[in-house]
Image (cartoon, rainbow, N blue to C red):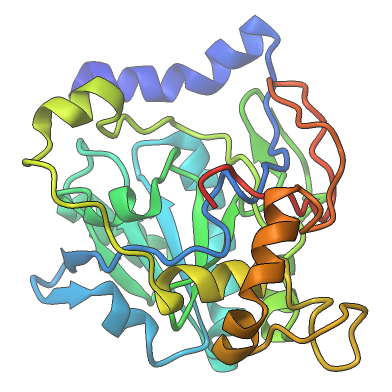
Length: 298
C-alpha cells in the first residue's frame, strides 16, 4: 500500500517531466452513456446502512455522483470545489453522493476527508465497486449527473482548473457547474461528456471481466422506459415537438409507435438523426458540438 501511495504522489511530477499535460476534452455522447439509464446499484454507505441508487436519486431532480480518493493528488485538489458546489446547489434540488474510487483508501480516511472538506452528502467506500461499475467510472476525478429516472445527463470533469501536469489559478471551463445550470433550466448539458484527468481506475474489463462474470443470462428485452424513450428524448424531441421543425411530434409512446415505419426507414438510411460529419477517433480527434450520431447498436 505504501508503494501505491508513493506512485500516486509522484503522478503529477512524472507527467510534467514527460511533457504530456492532459486537460479535459469533450467525448462523444453516444459512447459515454449520455441519455441512458444507469443500472440500479446497491451499495452500503459509510455508516453501514444499505442504499439503492434508485431510492437515492428519486426524491430530487438531479443527483451528482462524485468519484473521490484521499490518496489521489488530483482528486484532493477538486475536493473543496465539490464542497462549494454541494453548498450552492443543495437548495435547488441537487443531491451529492461521494463514492470512494480506490481500494487502498480506508473508510476512516474517506470520513476524515469528508469532514475536512465539508462534504455533507451521502458517503460510501463503494467497497465492491457497485457504483463505479454501474457508472463505468474511469478516473478518481470523474463526476456523474443523473436525473430521478437514473438517466445519465452529464459525466466528466468538474472543471479544467487541474489536470495531469498542470494547474490554473482559476478554471476556464466549469463543466459540472455549467451542466447543473443547464439541466435545472430544462436544457441539455453542453458538453454532456468530457474526459476527467485523474488517477486511472482499474475496473475489470475485457477478458478479465469475462473470466470472472457469472453464467450469461438471456439478452435483455428492449423496453420503452429503459431504452427507447431515452433515445427519442435525447435525439429526436428537440425538433419533433409542438412548434418544432420536425414534420410530426414524437413526444409520447403513441407518437413513436404510430410513426415507427418512417422512423425505421430514415434511421436505417442514416438520414435521421440529421448528422453527416465523418466519424473520428484517436487522441486528437475533433469532437463536434451537438453530435447527433447514433451508435450502431442504437
